[in-house]
Image (cartoon, rainbow, N blue to C red; front, side, top):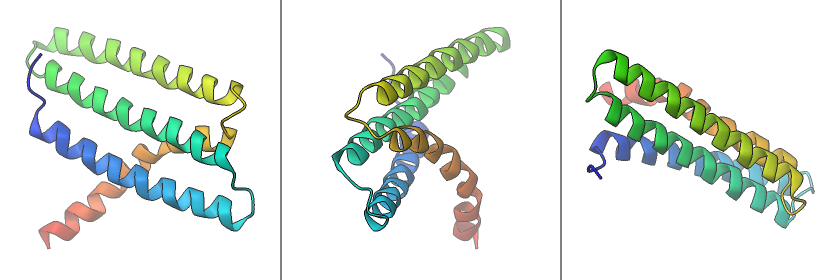
Length: 129
């Protein structure tokens, strides 16, 4: 197995940090509205972990794809996208079907990495200033 690239580690840690921040905010919202119970925490842990893992796997795939020719890289990325999509779907279905997870906290954290990526240019601009 090849060494994990520093950029993959850095970006995964960035996503992990934001998933933790958004998860804490979501837990606080459930607490404030009086709907918090252990199922909220379990759903958040399940989905938040899966989201970070999904991003990490994407980073590993990109790391692998850049060593291939264009056709091979494209095929690698497509296959990875399919497997990662199936992984997220399976985790979501399990989270919704198993009663120990809150449905909302299973679905919402799936979008946390996307939000973190959208916020990234704001923080990169602040670093450059």
